[in-house]
Image (cartoon, rainbow, N blue to C red; front, side):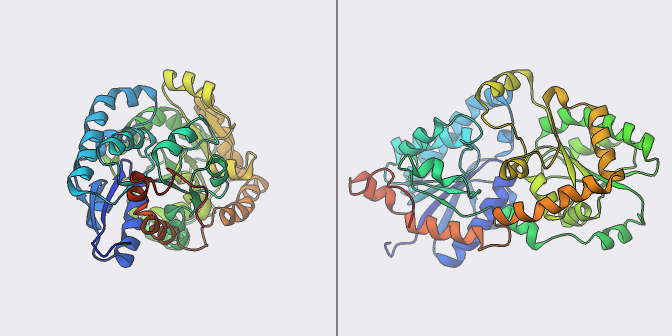
Length: 402
């Protein structure tokens, strides 16, 4: 490592990645106080000192149709990212999640700034679909930092430098586990049955999932007339969530990030989109149903490339359906309501999920060494691999990190 201050580029184009990026930046700032940070990220990364090149909100999309819609803008922004790296002679670029944008930006980065190290933080889920992406990673990334312990072998067996660090967001949820009693007292809920509803962190997710979720709640209230609904609102979708849910039964309570984990802990059960929320609910020992739906084109494509039967990471780690999943055509109100009702009325169904969470979360490393600190250490260690690679002193990737 040279004495010159490091110039670090970061790319995070979704809310969960913004949170991971902010955690990474906090540790990097402690370990390398003179480093500078630029790239694309959300409000959390800006708060940590990121010089933002362009807004990320247009890229918070899911599915083939939406990806195609934003592709022209994404290509322009990828060019801007690579040009910025070249202009400052960036030492390292860290691409956090967001596979589509990462792929566009890192190919341009390798052409425009070949001496910049490329690190992928949050590996593409090659265990779930499109295992051929490992070849792309080997060609364009100098190292991979994974969220899940079973991921590195998929890369190291192909000669890719990869290491498990864990998920900073899961660890943050573990440290901030909610207070159910305090939440119920604040909102005067006493012992009423409480359902947490989490319809996603992207606008299209919310609008697509709100109708079947509402039908499920309507049916559930037929069996549980006193049911109340609580919805933690993700950054960036507050307006659309309130609009979609304002006339729902169950007198929805909307809470922001400060009360999110208290709300999860207080809920008797949850209905959630697939994503980070399932692990956050598990941390708070809240049994749940996962339901998800995408546009027909994405569903058609996914069926041809998917190699795992599970949508939730909890089920992936357990390698069984700990959490019932209602995906695509199965994502309909009556079936979801019946599954939720069993969580309210059947103690055995409740206990089965909650008891499984402990071993799964331990495997995910929620109470282990700091994921963001481990990632920061590796980013700094790998920061000059790009320079060495560009002059031929190291191969593009050389197996697992020590």
